[in-house]
Image (cartoon, each protein chain N blue to C red):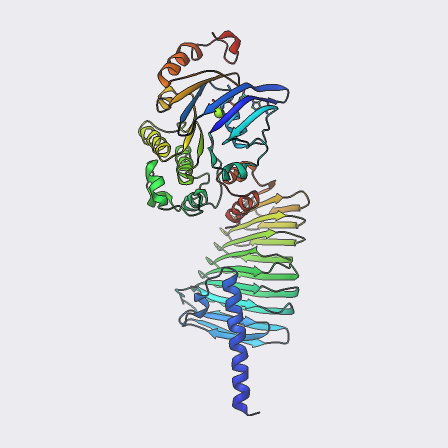
Length: 326
Length: 240
Ligand SMILES: Nc1ncnc2c1ncn2[C@@H]1O[C@H](COP(=O)(O)OP(=O)(O)OP(=O)(O)O)[C@@H](O)[C@H]1O
Ligand SMILES: [Mg+2]
């Protein structure tokens, strides 16, 4: 076989996988145009193969394929303000497999970027998706991170996202993790943020558990610098036999640090189990940290409001859940 | 269109609805006048099937079929709907989506029109959530707009005027008349005679039973003379 035929074959299979990812993404309700546009920075990874890597001025994406996934180093250069969101796309199309993403982020001082990660596992029967992220946000830098998962209906998937985030003086970290399409499977989410002086951290998690989904969410915010602010927010809806344990921890360790834990879990169905464990701790007498945690059922009147317009009960519940998780 | 016969409801041992009979004609706006606590909202719930109310006795016949065993959705799919006295707030549901899902084919044609009918500027409200950030009056008007979008066969309106200011009230009443002209029958629940003026007939409710039905002006006068001055509200045996 000639070299060029081989290159072509590899090229073809990459193209096929890329198309497969895009199709799966679209089927799950995503807008495929963002993954096809040329002048949008993006990284597309299938299993342990990098299918596309389109950086943009001010943003460097370095990748290294490993046996079980990809190592990614994302650098936002000092002072760079990336106008359009950067898209990351991780996925695995076969029924079985392991994908480990090792992520290093260096958002340098005064930089600004918004990153949207799409995680696509439409056919998972026995899949593990792990992410280990080590993230540094420089002084006065701003990093918005939104991770949305698109799962299939089997639930044979384990998702283990872990991140340690250091936010420098005056920096901002805002992240949202959303898993409400398809079955969750097993989720073990663990994000920990360390804030320096006047830094802001906002962690949001939105999950819809059904079937036998098993959900663990752990949000930790350390307000170590004076005037740092933090919000650990979670919205979890559970149906069927799903179970969830949500821990929101906030530590006020510096003067004028302000933190809040806001956890709402709704249980729809008698066999679902929800637990909420808010921990607030203050080691500086000028810091203030508050929390609210509520576990309840879906409001009957809301459901009947939509039923009285002709929606079936399941559809009505669905609309309400989508609203809460929006 | 709607025939309620000898309806009874007892809650926690307390009779709330007593031997209540009511007939709403096709194309009719039928007013129900009653003081606080006489059972107006309870009737609305019984007809719509909401709040888990099941009649202890009696029948609710809609277009010839007893609907008392049907779910809320099934009743709505038959063309009945309810605008709540205190509408629910739903986090994350926009006015646009609410109007769309209310409309019969799942897609409101010109949803803006329904907001304008109740005096709300579409550009200001369409993309807002129907959550706690809306004022009471705004939420009530949006409730009315969603009923308009549904074009129901029978609209049960539970005090559509409560929380509505005097400037908006005529608009709201007009929208009810308009809806009626477009073919909806209306059960118009209120304790205001001003509102019942737009009805074809008005029934007076006391202690969970309808004590008389007649033309609006006559019923209003009777209500004024007897109910508003009544020293024994909810004791119909004292009326004549
Ligand atoms: N679960 C219950 N147990 C006992 N009494 C109840 C229950 N629910 C409602 N009631 C009573 O039933 C009566 C009728 O209530 P309803 O809400 O229908 O009144 P209403 O005519 O709509 O009054 P308003 O003008 O204040 O809206 C009231 O006296 C109320 O206290
Ligand atoms: Mg009432």
